[in-house]
Length: 333
Image (cartoon, rainbow, N blue to C red; front, side, top):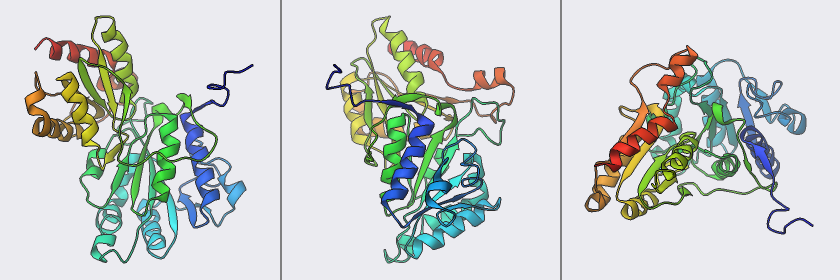
């Protein structure tokens, strides 16, 4: 007989969690529709939207021309007039094509209309390197987005969060950018079959510890967990905070962790200079300076485009080994 605590649990890949979330939220909300390049007939280049066209028809699953500016502009107009569009921007790098629509329309319209217009737009996009897709298809550009008042930005690390954060984003009456990770698509995790929400703006403790806090963004949570296992062999007990939502950011969870461990590190895949890590480090020193036993460490990619060459790309990306080396240096201080 199956254990009552485990019999209802199942594991599915990150990509299937996204797909299931899209299907369930479109089934629940009649005012939702999906638009983007190859989202209908093909089901998305990564398979995230398979079956949506067959289930909901061409009026709710719309293949668009290759025009990100037009796609986002259509979504802004549709949202302002009462619909709840779900936009796919195939690669995060392509946000540059529609950045004016995001920066000056999507993020600003509700404020400029005094709240009379709501913009319930969910923009889904794929970020991250590691698949040899070269410099124009491998970037992590979340620092662009978190700087824009009016936007919410989420970065799910687990399949559970990929589904739950997506559903919460679609139900939110503000524009939300959901940044999935290409290299995480095959990672499996526990995901309930029913529809559920993961609250926007609430971090999770991915691993509890007492000696060091690592704040890891997106896929770097897995690298941090790997590093924590290696550090445990050295007697170092590492706590890992997964912010899940980058804007609004759950500062309280991070600060409470740092007050316990007294040492902190931030890890993200994006370029280190000007990245989210600098903001998190600043918040820690402003709110927990007296608790710190050493400066806040930061790990990110070097200030370079993402290389196409697989060997160079692997050297470019942060990983568990780099985290362990930085942690040893930090703990020696």
